[in-house]
Amino acid sequence: MSNHRLFLAIKLPRELLAQLHSYQEQLNPQIFRIVEEDKLHLTLIFLGYVEEEKIKKIQNITLKMTQNFQPQSIQFLETIYGPNPKFPRLIWLEGSPNHSLEQLKKSLEKELRDKAKITLEEENRLFLPHITLARIKTPPPSNLPPKTKINTQIHFSFSPSSLWLMESHLHKKGAQYIDLEEFRFKN
Image 1 (cartoon, one colour):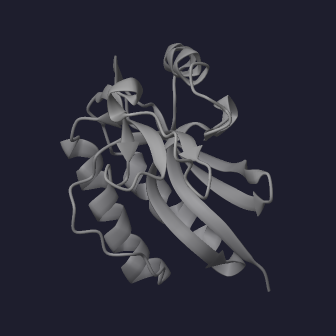
Image 2 (image 1 turned 30 degrees about the vertical axis):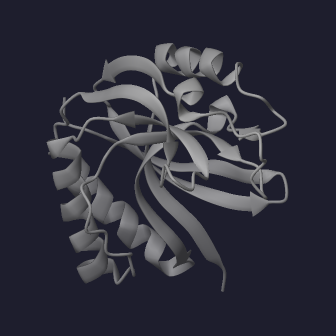
């Protein structure tokens, strides 16, 4: 019986990917492991390792919740060190709080816990949309650029049209992602 490492994510529009790519090109590859373009996404819920027989249930629940959902536009603001700026592990593009996505995330998590018996980490913080752009190589280099060099305004907003169920395979060279299913939002 195999387990699958799954997450629910929103894919990014071309124009945003192009802006992120030009930002990433300025980062020093000696210090940062750049996230490749086809791996850039906004994770809504990380499901973790899930047994094969629960996947169908996850798909049914997600379909039911997304088809009646109309998301607000997602707004991105700037690139910053994350998740803790004092001990950064990555660079991400951070957005402003998004009430509609927060609601979707909460309702989906509740349904997935109750109906599909998925164990999810309880997060007590506000959901802030963010996209991981680069990871700091370990151990962290002593010549980490100051945050003023990392912070760049990237104002971009878009209305997502769907949510994707994705699987991640971890390899030495990093993760490889496979699209399992797309769930379209009501438009």
